[in-house]
Length: 188
Image (cartoon, rainbow, N blue to C red; front, side, top):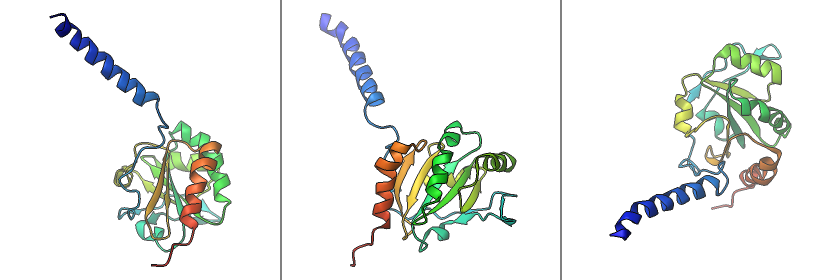
């Protein structure tokens, strides 16, 4: 009888222990994505209205722009996202590397706010697509902002980083994955 009374307590302690273990174990930025190794979903993002560089509208981008044009980093960001502000200088540094392109997906944001953000912090992106309703982000499996994807020359997502980039995450995870994506593919 005593055992029956202790059973709910034992189950609760076991479940609480499992939840605490999952909460504190591992890196939360490493969440498996079903899209890794698959071609990017079909999409077309219009340009961020009124965003100009050298007197020209900065283009939006579509799924076709990510195939056959080298490796591309796609950073999902928003002006209302505090961690996006923190990682932005690092994106500006990454944009200086001419081995890959850097595109921005402005997620669930107003054009005026997004332009002000890029005006204040700089625009490191070659193309900025406006995902005003978040539909493309959903298709990409975006959990929240910021997130950064590496897309190889074949148009496949090969890596996904969840959360803000840091110097450590860039050197330990992002750059090695970029190097892999840049490496020549073996002949078949």
